[in-house]
Image (cartoon, rainbow, N blue to C red; front, side):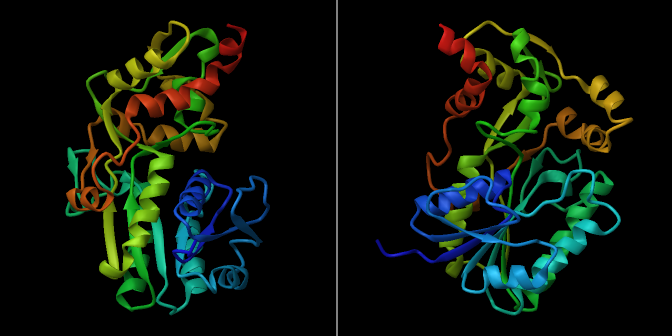
Length: 317
């Protein structure tokens, strides 16, 4: 089979990196994955060992790639003091003036909680310092694209979920007490929330990259994913579970207390506004690129995520 091109995934061991790499492999690309270790090997991915703090190592990793998926991240509580911007500056330097395409995962932090419908045309007015960091990082990418150094395709998405995703909201809160037959509801039942099923988001990265020749040098796409209310989310989890689940409140108070000693949890609590306000990502243009029936049905996706939490009981049955 003829290759669709060469892509390097920076941050191959992260949630986004893993799912993006699998999607590009499945679509027929030659895929390389860059990281400090090959702790989660993927069939069809050539591993490149290196450190994201080393510009020369990154430059070598992306040298023969037409497309680079920038799935690098920092620990949630390590974004401040210019560290997030410095990480992006290193990637931009490694890309050089090559004209390569960078696919970058954006998020909803750039927008105010008052924005009910969040489209690519919505003004970016970040609600928090963390959102302001994301705005600055994307401005760096826009400047690089406007200089002609590279093409930048931002694909913005809601909160990630996928099977076996450690340290996400399902793992840390929503199904934290699955062993006690409990499911935590993130907020008011009628409040809507945008979710991104990572296998689908990975495929969206690949689809956008495949269409790059017909796109502008800088694009801001919004991946609709699954927009559901907290009530609908919990109902889907209950339907997928093999045992009855009692609905309990999201452990915000506990997370706040834990945050006194754990900076990571403290930063998570600061983003509570995203769960208390309805913000829906919309982008008819990206929807048209992806095509009809692109997304995995919500109930099917939730079923895949829920199953591992109850694997022992399913086997016992």
